[in-house]
Amino acid sequence: MCILMLFNLRERLSYEEIATETDIPSRDLIRANLIRALQSLALGKPSQRILVKHPRVKEIETDHSFTVNDAFTSKLHRVKIQTVAARGESEPERRETRNRVDEDRKHEIEAAIVRIMKARKQLQHNNLVAEVTEQLKGRFLPSPVVIKKRIEGLIEREYIARTEQDSSPFAVKKMTEAEIEQVLDKSMVPFRFLQEKDVFERYYKQHLAKRLLLNKSVSDDAEKNMISKLKTECGCQFTSKLEGMFKDMSVSNTIMDDFKQHLNTSGNELMGVDLSVRVLTTGFWPTQTQQNITGIPTAPRYAYDAFQRFYLAKHSGRQLTLQPQLGSADLNAFFYGSVRPRAEEEGASSTTSTFDGGASSSQVASGAPRKHIIQVLSASKGREPMALFMGKQDGG
Image 1 (cartoon, helix red, strand yellow):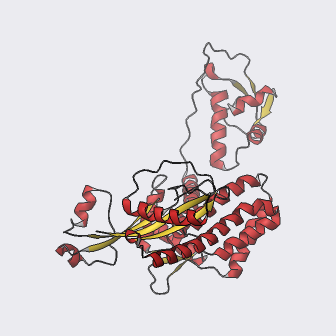
Image 2 (cartoon, rainbow, N blue to C red):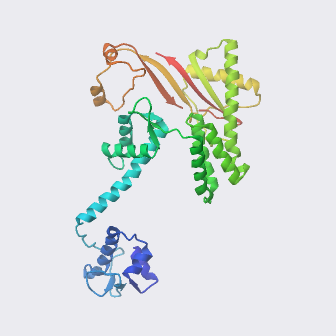
Image 3 (cartoon, rainbow, N blue to C red):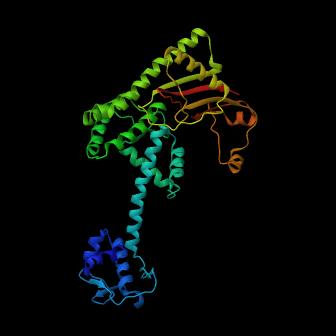
């Protein structure tokens, strides 16, 4: 279609002009598809020849030209053009195709490794290979050998590192202050070319919120340094909400210290819940959809109600509303009884458990108590302040 539309403005076009106007890359394999398309339009069945080729030979050279076939007619509203069969690829062409595919996949694998290591911080080699395979299997199935090569490449370029205690686990490489400063300075270069900086600010605020609320930030100093650079570049109004987010985190720490002192004085143990609350100012943080909170268990509800009474007693006229988007809860639970063999369990279900504290196989076989830590992601919000609560609870 894009080839035919060129003839709306020109009566005659050479092959080179068509290739330039359609902006098709000059690689041999890509240009071969353009040649097939032109052959189909000009050298196919006589009843389907929409174009006329000059000279009328099968081969297409750069100086050959094409014009519209004025004699072409069809009673159909849509005309299907039979595509000329492609010739078989030669061995050099097949090798070029494989090399290009391998090169594209290499970047996909490395990007997956970096994403996983940023989230997990430290991971055993086999677990890292399994997670990379799981993340990429929707696009292609990477070979463990190829993944290992990409891991080694990232180690050589110092994106990740082996742990000092053991060569098997990998960890995200810790950067020095000078290296962090260099990365931040480089990141500001493309930022200056952005036309819609407000869009960048919206997405940056969303990611910063997750890092702060889920304790995923590597360094508060680095975060503040980046905000300072944005402030220098765009002014204080651009970063006022980002700075407000850090202020909320600092104020929340102070509030929690006061709350815990209040609990010690009153002797309230919050039914065994170790509660941590973040009080967030509306307007600073990304807008969250209001949700109806139902079915909160008794213990965390009791703990939160105790905090709410404490907070509103000190700040009358304010309102706290729970938001479960970015909160979390760690449940310490003991499990009793025997466990099915792992092979049998995997055959019955895709869900597996990780034993905390390294319960030995003999303990599992004998049905000894096993301790698990289960993390449940869940936050809170309000009209003036928002409250995000996280906690730990022991259970059986």
